[in-house]
Image 1 (cartoon, helix red, strand yellow):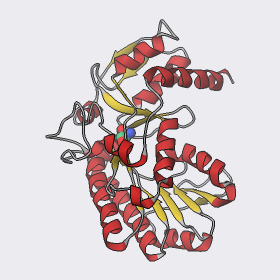
Image 2 (cartoon, rainbow, N blue to C red; image 1 turned 60 degrees about the horizontal axis):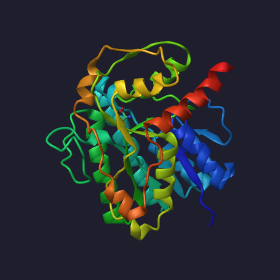
Image 3 (cartoon, rainbow, N blue to C red; image 1 turned 90 degrees about the vertical axis):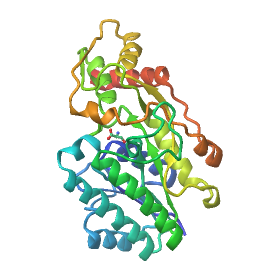
Image 4 (tube, rainbow, N blue to C red; image 1 turned 30 degrees about the horizontal axis):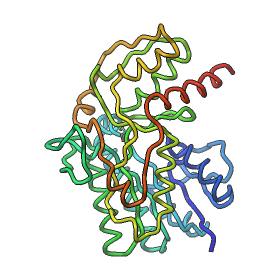
Length: 313
Ligand code: SER
């Protein structure tokens, strides 16, 4: 039987690009884009609220879905504005997806986690796979619980759930929303339009980041790995490159020498200060051959090239 894929959160930063990438592999008919928004201008789109269990089950049944990519979540910064609301969406959504997987016997499910699972009392300089997970944001708490639920469904019900801990994701096609790493996308948009940038994170705030191409490739490569090689069923550390706001500023200045960043940290600084600086992703490399391609320089060149075209029009 052919794979029939449902993407939940297809209108979001990663969902937008993952939908395109999966459609190139499987075809538009085999990949349903869904989101909570009413109208998104992509073909084969369905409005689905993942917190509505009956609606999700109906969508999976009616369309013969065999795989779900569950990307809908409230991220770190937005979650802190309304913790119980964020917890409810993140956890109810996840449990509904896992229950659909179990009851409707889906082949495979992807659920992303995040660097926000780390918080206190771990090695921030080079964060390994099995460091303590003591997050201090509601987003991080929901993802730690989520990783454990994924592992639980795998162990107890044999559900083939897979996950990576995304770093901050940077791409030119779609905008992030409500995250702490979002500055690293916005900075390119400002620079290419000829503006200077005000950073809500301070100088010296090194965080793990990843170019969108790498993030999409990691997701699809993990999902295409034979099940017996996917040894970690909580979530895999994956690394791209690490940098602070002044590093990306310098990389941009090679293209726009007059570009300047000023630093006005806000509440998101407190969140960033809890997170890793660098990620050790050796388990992903060993188990499924993961390897990032983009460093800060390559990513910057590609971002500027594409955004320049976008803003010309
Ligand atoms: N990009 C996310 C955030 O900033 C981290 O996973 O919340």
